Length: 247
Length: 332
Image (cartoon, rainbow over all chains, first blue to last red; front, side, top):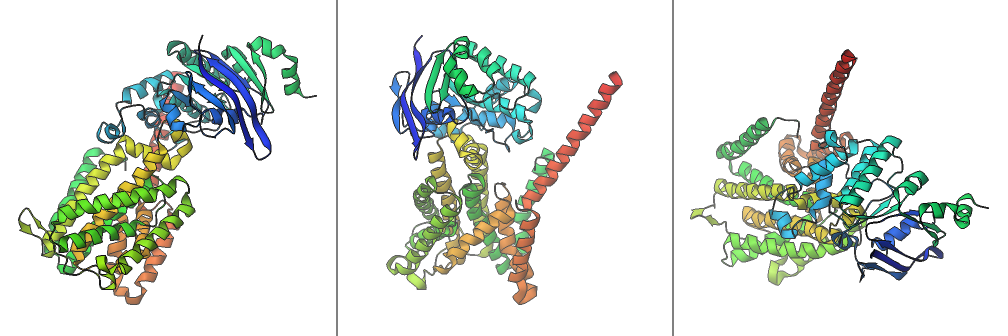
C-alpha cells in the first residue's frame, strides 16, 4: 500500500513550548489511522500544521509524494484533503442542505461559473444523497443551528465528505455524541472508507471507538510519537499505559 | 420573509413597483428629488450591505466610493461623455479601489478594519478637496448635465427619477442574483466562520477582496447617479458622515437582509422630511428613534419581522408535533 500522506519531522513551537516536537508518520492509502494521546499532547496542533491552518516551525508534509507544506487550507481542500474540527463548525443560519451545498460548491466549476451558473452549483441531488446517507432526511430544510448536538456533529462530518475527498482528518468526531448515534456514525465512516476508498485520520478520546474503527493507532505524548501499531499492540504497550495512567 | 405565501409576495412586490412608477407622477419637484435620492442611496446601501451584511467586513468608506463615482461622472459628463460611459468608468474605478482597500481586511478585522477604512475615507475627502485641478476643490463642479436616454431628455425631475428607479431595479436584480449564487453563500460563510470556510475549499482571500470590490462598485454607481441628480457636487457631501449615514441605513434596515437597504435608505432620506414639522427637534427625535429601535431589535427592522416569522414557524412545528404525538398515543 502506498502512502497518501507522509509527515516528516514536523515541529511547532509556541514561545518556549514545543507543542509538536518532530513528528514523523505516514498514512497508507485506504486505511483508518487513529491518533490518540492525553489532552495537550499536540494532536490538534499536528492536524493544523498538516492542513495549513498553522505554519509549522519545521518539517515537511507530502501528499501523494508532492510537498504541500505552506499551502493554504483552501488549496489543500481542493487537492482532496478535508477535515472536521474538535468544536462544532456548522453554519447555524443556513439549512442542513445549504450547509452541504456550501461544503461542495468550491469543487464545482470555477469562480465565473459559480457566479453565473446555477445557484446550487448543481449539488442539490448530491446534498440530498448525503442527507439520506447520514439519516438527516427530516431535517434537510431546518437551519443547522436548530439541530441537536449529535445531529450537528453528523452534519459536520457529512460536510467534510461533500467535496469527494481522498483524505479526511477528523478531530474528535465522537465527542458528545450519544451511543446509538455513535454506532451510526461509525457505520457511515466505514462505508465511506470502503466504498469511496477514502483514507481517514481520526483523533479520538473514546477508546472503544478508536480500537474498533481503526486499522492502526498512533499514540502521542508531549508533542512526540510514543507508539504506532495495531490497536491490540498499542493497548499492551507499557509506555502507552504509563502515559495514560501516569506514575 | 419566508412565512408569506409565494403568490402573495409576488403580488406585494408588483404593487410596490407599480406604486413607485405611478404615484410620483403627481409629485412636485422637491418630492421627486427626495425620492430620487432614496433610489440612489438604496444602491449605495445595497453595496455596503453586501460587504458588511453578507460578507461581514466592516467598512466606513462607502461614502468615499459614492464620491469617487460622483466625481468620475461629473468630470466625464461635463467633458461631453455620455452618462452610461461615465457609470461604467465609475464602476471600474471604484471596483479597483475597493479591491485594493480589501487587502487590509485580509489582516485586520472588526474595529481595526473600521479604522483602516475610516482613514481611507478621510484620504478620499482630502483628494476631492485639495486636488483642485481635477475636482474643482472647494468650488466643486457645477452644470453637470443629465443624460438623454434613448433620445429622451431627462432634464426634468420626473424623467430623471425614472433613470434612478431603473438603475435601482437593475442593481437590485444583479444583487439578488449574486446573493443567491454560490458566491453569496461563500460571502455568508466568510461572515459566519472563515476558518471552517477555508477548510471547505473556499478561497477566503479572493472572496473577501470580491466582497469589498463589488460593494464599493455599487457605491460608485450611486455616486455616478448622484452627480447628475444634484447637477452640482463639492467635497462636503462625501465626507465621513455620508459613510456613517450609509452604515446606519444598513444597520437600521437590517444588515444581511436583502430588503434592509431599501428600508434603511427610506428611513434615512424620508424620515427627516416627515419630521420637518418638529423644526429644530427632528435630529434629536431621529437619534432617539434609532437608539430605541436598536435596543428593541439589534438586527434592525427586518430583524423584527424575521423573529416574528421564526416564532410563527416554531409554533406551527410544535402544533404538528402535538398532532403527531396524539395520533401515536391513539394507536397505542
